[in-house]
Amino acid sequence: MPRLFTGIALPMMHKTALSILQSGVPEARWIDTSDMHITLRFIGDVTPTLGNEIAEALARETWAAPNIVLTRLDSFGKGKPRSLHAAVAKDEALTRLARVHETLMQRLGLPPETRNFMPHITLARGRGWSAYDVETWLATTALPALPPFQPDHFNLYSARESRGGGPYVIEARYPLAP
Image 1 (cartoon, rainbow, N blue to C red):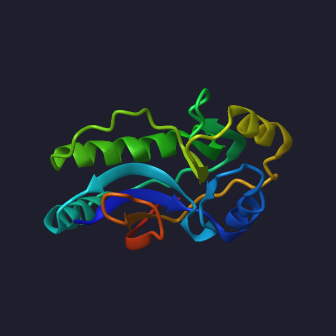
Image 2 (cartoon, one colour; image 1 turned 30 degrees about the vertical axis):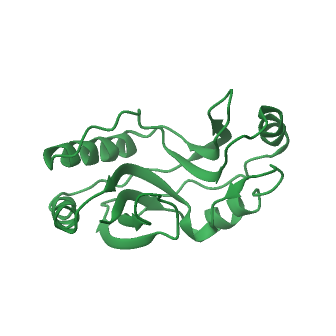
Image 3 (cartoon, rainbow, N blue to C red; image 1 turned 30 degrees about the horizontal axis):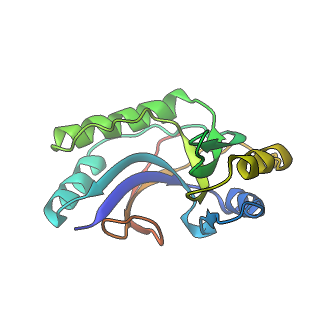
């Protein structure tokens, strides 16, 4: 069963600039530059048949391109940090894109996503991090000034079964209209 998710890949300039930040937190599992993306909808482990249905459902829609602006560095799991990320500014087209993906997945019988959509680019994952180390990294690491970008497509990705993680494989590309 493939593990699937939809997401937006980053321009190489953004990936390179973010990869330069990837040091300074002990025990961090830094995300490979080639795997950096903005997740739109985590789908999970599905049968090959359902995977094909998902790919076909996504192809039947017309999608508007969002405007992507990186705003700050942050972490998830404040008291017990578990990931570092670059936050993405709220954008109506981006929110709509994620919301329609959610609706399509539920129509295909998948359970609803329980977390609110918080667009971001994961830079590192970890467990047992010191909150002090994470706060120090956030206080001393500056997000580079990167220009906004408007992607021309999003991807259906697959990851390793049951565990997730990269390397991610692009299973299908879907155009975004400007």
